[in-house]
Image 1: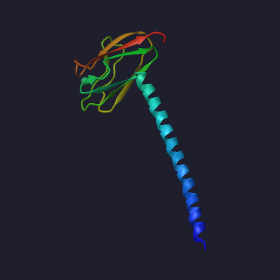
Image 2 (image 1 turned 180 degrees about the vertical axis):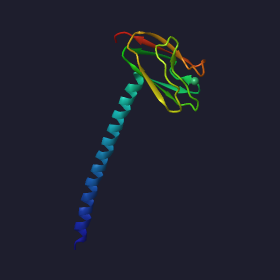
Image 3 (image 1 turned 90 degrees about the vertical axis):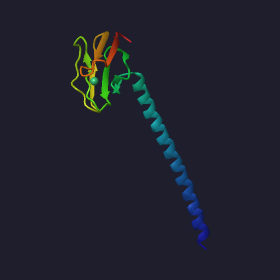
Image 4 (image 1 turned 60 degrees about the horizontal axis):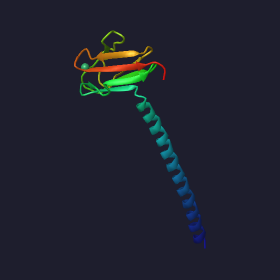
Length: 129
Ligand SMILES: [Cu+2]
């Protein structure tokens, strides 16, 4: 007569495995939320400009001094990020390439793509917070 015991053992095991799985799922969801919120914070800090369809997706970006802004080119064509007053100048960025610049002085920094001069953007750097 071992069957009832086995069934009971199986039920107990299922119970604990079920609990463990639920905990694992909850932990996984919490970790995802954490990653998502950190990502959202980074996005809202506005330190990334996506280049797509021959345009800068944030044409005017305002950041505090000391911010590093990263551009990423999603187009098949190469683009540059070139300051109109030579404050910075990226090399040609191929598809999926990134380029970053740290703004250490307050000011207004207009820029464009030397290969497609109609592509323009501006970074406004504020002093303090
Ligand atoms: Cu371009």
